[in-house]
Image 1 (tube, rainbow, N blue to C red):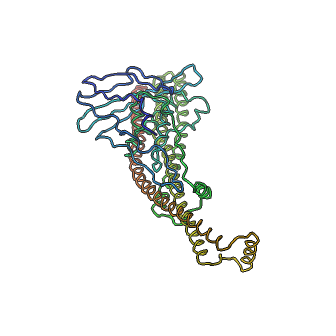
Image 2 (image 1 turned 30 degrees about the vertical axis):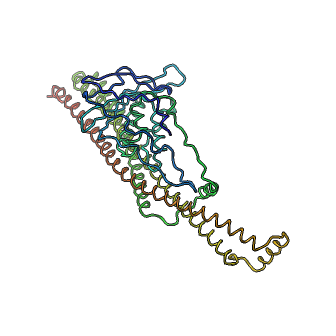
Image 3 (image 1 turned 90 degrees about the vertical axis):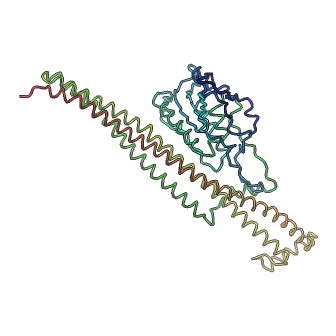
Length: 486
């Protein structure tokens, strides 16, 4: 992807004074909807502004390398020029339905980015509306630029709301909002992804035109060995000599996925029981209130207890909603995260198998050339077979010496090509492996942040619920103490 694709981006490089300078921002050309006057603004301390185009003048790489046979097999996977010493915070809030009354309504979210220069304490703030497809666009660009990185998952579309048509409901939109914020948080925790020019464009560009639609990388031919590369990829064989480093990674991630899947299933059972309890508490509360109409001498106490049960039911429902959104939502995303990482490890194995197949083919070709050069018979070929072949060549008027020399020359040419392909494949495999190892460390770091957030949310939700329950039932005691007892 070339710089020209970003030429029409309006970069907000001005620094406001002590007050915030507001401005409108839109998602033009992609139906993103313009933001209100309060949606886009920047603030600063009046000092000279620092460059907001942190990504550098050009993208380091925008296309996914295929590591094809005969190519250089080098993956350009590094971020654009690093940002200054800047701390970035992003929030996703204020969902708004756009295109009401049209055939294709959608929801936009206010993405607010605050960049703080740690050295100067200068603050830049961008508030821009983005729709879900804009998040998909950025994710796809990052996948192309960083083929050896596991890009954080987006909240999935495979929910019941997409089948029932309730994708504009408050519950669904709220869950998606939190999922999108978690996605951006993970991207910004990744040292390579957060420095990508695509991320800067997503967070800061006011012009959002069709220039930013996903572009498929151009496929470039790799020469005479294209068909050979395709054949090797299609007849992918298992890795002969496994690298223990990646075996351990695969086992660790697979165990994590299994544990998360089991946790998800168990907690969904807890949530189902909580839903049953909600209905039971609500029904019990209604029953006590009705009982108060009969037991006139205890009406106030029974009504108060019934209302407490109904309030308890609402608090329990809020607990279930919070844990489903903030805890189970995170678990579900991490299961997808693990699946993506396992897929990347499979891709690395595929590259190793390609290298091993090429090496074996080179050895076979070299052995065949040496056999012909030394006038040796092929393994398994009998004297009768050689006699018949000789007679056939005589009938065709082919000189055996000339034929052998031509075959030797063709094999020599193929050996040169294969040696180049083996070197390229080896270099590509080594680079890809190093990048996978680096990304594994980053994945572990992000996982710690995310698990801390998820289990903190789980704990906070329960603390809030039990605190509310205590307050609810405390208010019942005074009314019950007023009841006359002989």
